[in-house]
Image (cartoon, rainbow, N blue to C red; front, side):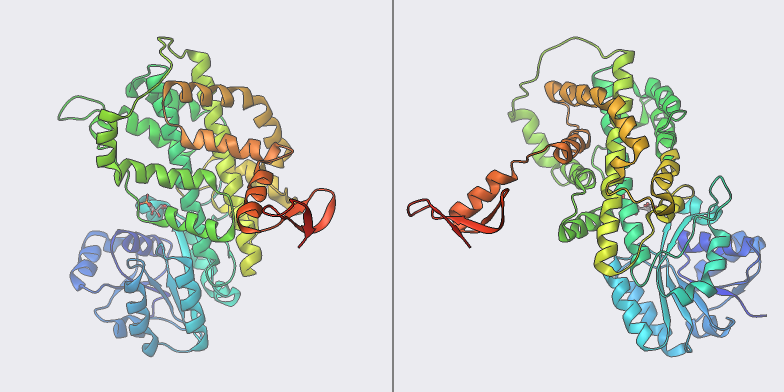
Length: 478
Ligand code: 6PG
């Protein structure tokens, strides 16, 4: 009996995807560089379904039906290239190599191009949902050729999470690196999503005086509102956890230095290249950097830098808590609006023809950013309705209009008390930046023209102009 799919790389994500496939009735060939891992998986979970144990890549290849489907689940970067190089000589035309790791999309574009020249399909797949999702149904974002999806799509759809209406959270995203790009932006939004939750937590604690245990209840309540989402739900779980060793809230004994594996940074790097203002994601990445790489600077700053805060003993009441909830909602919405706009820009740039409603639909279940809000976002883009910016969708326009006073109050309160709320405040600045009839960019242009003759446009005429700053200050057309 041949296997329908092979998995190489049986660390937890690879192992769980293999088990998920087997549980859905597929025969799965297993391979790992050290056979011990393969054997451990078989010993512990062999009963999940039909597995074929292989020791070498040649055996793995031989155990598969054609066209072969081989899922690589190794660390992003050089290890992926190493496995591809070993596999290629063993494969036949039309075989499909799938990379389910968090690979950087330019690598995926390069690999797809190389393998296409060898008549092989290379499919970069974004997989979200962590270990649990991989086992029980992740959100899956496959790129690569449309043709490869005909053979691979049904398997991936089978093992993916299902939205409430039963639709699989897996659909073909677009050619070459599109799947990994969309997963990357998903992670960027994940960063922003967590950062706004963190800002809310800090304000509830320092302004409303809510201890972590009390906040667990607040977040659980918020999870019953339009904020309902996986990350809000697990925030309640983390906040109610008490440290066994000290009896303190666990969050108080965790070192306040956030780690990151790089996908958020990649999102911001691409956004900078695209000229796409994903301020919420950028502030979230920088907030993590400030917390961790700047640790020593922070220690010194605590001794040396003035606070200059408004002294107050007012404690935020229930109304303030609601204000924070609303500020969180608005800031989160802005992060999504920015992320979606970045996807649209990248889509045009790379000829991906990304379908924003489909992408929103894939994020409804299985992934880390799964949220009620995604249903509304999907609706906003549905049926060719393409608001130029997600915030223009009538439902969101209205919600923000209602919540704006709260959002502004929270930013003022945070600022006056010296509590950093970089995403709450930068999202509001973005919102106001969109809205303002005139931006200070006019002055920037004036300055650029002054020191570098970079020219400027006029509001009342076509063309580019330059003022003879060091001459008689008359204007010339450039
Ligand atoms: C997911 C997660 C997953 C991983 C992130 C964490 O969608 O399942 O995003 O991919 O947990 O890479 O990223 P950081 O380590 O950068 O926070």
